[in-house]
Amino acid sequence: MKTLVSLLLCALISFGVSGQNAPTSRALSYQECIDEMSTCADSMYVLRNAVLRYDVNRDRRFAQRDSIFRKDLPTIVVSKPVLFENVRFEGSGIIGEDGTPSVLELYKLEFNKKVRITKTQAESELNFANCVFHDEVKIDAVEGSLSIRDSQIDHIFSIRDSEMEDVRIMNCTISGRITVSYLELETIIIANSLFNPDPSLDELSTRLIHYLSIQSNDARIQYNTFKKSTDNQTVWVSTLLNDRYSSFDVNTLDCPVMFHDCVFTGRFALATNRFDSLVGFHNLQFNMSNAYFSWPDLEGKIAGFVWYTYEDVVDGIFFQGFGDQQLVQRPLINRLMIMKQSLYNLYRQQGLISYANGIFIEIKDLETRIFEYDYRQEPRLKGYFDWKMNLFLKRFSAYGTDPVIAIIYAFKVILLFALIYFFFHNDWDIISKGRVQKRLKLFMDYFRRKEGMATLLLEREKEELSELEAFRRDYKNLEKPVPKFFLLAADLHYRFSKLNIDLQTAYYSKTDILKDEWGQISKGRRQWTSFVTGLWFVLYLMIGILVKALNAILLSINAFTTLGFGSIPTQGLPRYIVILQGLIGWVLMTLFSVTLITQLLR
Image (cartoon, rainbow, N blue to C red):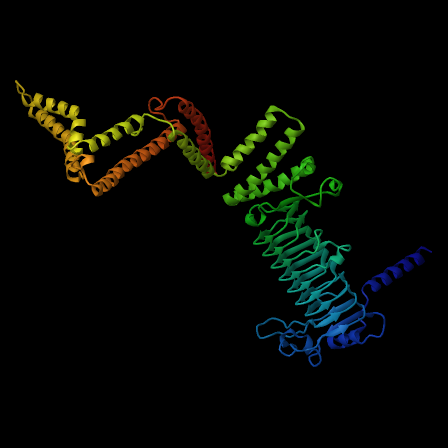
């Protein structure tokens, strides 16, 4: 009895195995297969347990090397659903002059109904070119390679549960969706394609590309354009495992993209993309020495993933930490912080300091929002200063990442206080109320007397001239001899001191245009004299104002830098303003120094 049962079990197992690997029953050329599909009278075209072989006489349409011949071929319409099961798609076996095999493609086919390809045999080469897929396409449990180029995909196109060599979707127009899941393969590339989604498919899938549980040595999504018709659409890359090379680059996206539970142990590049929406990261792992993230593409767009349990308090599936509803979710905040900190460490390790500074500012911005939220929930003095200190550091040094900002604000403070000091008197000014009065009196005396400006100048300098002449008599009429060196020095001092007065006297003598009393000159000379002397006076005022402005700036610089040189050269209110400016200067200069040292150490 036991022997009989054993024989029956062996028979059943043998039958099951033979059923799973059914032998090939038919052999067709590619043209024969296409003719059967296009003329099928059944409700569905089914091809099982077959092999498609290249016929050199009949399959010229499908040889890529005959591109000139097939350029004007008409499109073949397949109006029935199609099922390929356990079919081998053989290559041509022809090697071109460049040493590469000649590729066979299902060329210019228009599928109006569903297409399913399952359990292709090993080493199959399944290639589509210039085809149109109006309805759903399912490819599962296949082997070999798959290529789709220059085609139109209008519905869900899914590839799943397969071990393959490579998958390539190139130069396609896609109004449907691409779903790739549970694959082990060497290469997967989606490139140079336009995703222009049909909003009616959102009920089936909102993800324009959906990667799920893929193990690949070479995984690339590049040179694509992703448009959106609704706000729900995303590009979703989930649980992608890659140990050689992976890239998401040179894409243009109107919709968000999400990297979820991906592990990149080899090279990874996220660069040269144009993101008009957010870029989400959740549990992303990458090689710190062999990954590149282009910060200009990501600035202000990094987001975390929102678990479904938070959807009642957070809009959408992406999370950036804005608003009270998001700030209260600290687990989400922490995950977002961890991702940004990973990018910061990556940029630091790679020496990309400007990128590191950019992500560091975003980390501190998020921290500032947290401080503000915590203070509003539980007002405390320390919480208030934590919040305001972060705001201060951002405004005046970009959180210690840019010393130039502190310098710019330093110049603004210096100029602002200099403007205040300009309207107050200080001891350095050459122009004041008394000096202006003296200058006006000099001009009025000039108009009332005939002697001229040179004589008035000598009268004004009379006391100084008397002192100089007395000094000259002292060293000229010495009763006892002294060293000649001191006599020579005294004589040089006298000559140089008197030279200034002599030059001014000579200048005014040559340029004096009045040379008479104001009331005794003609009307024409009065106008000319008024113009020239008025110009002299305006020039004096302008020089005085310029010097006053320079003095105000010097006083402001002295107060700001807190260097000090003697007593404060001003009185009244400005003296207290100087002290206030000194305090501001001390804070800004300290902030500048610390920021500069921090950047140098980085």
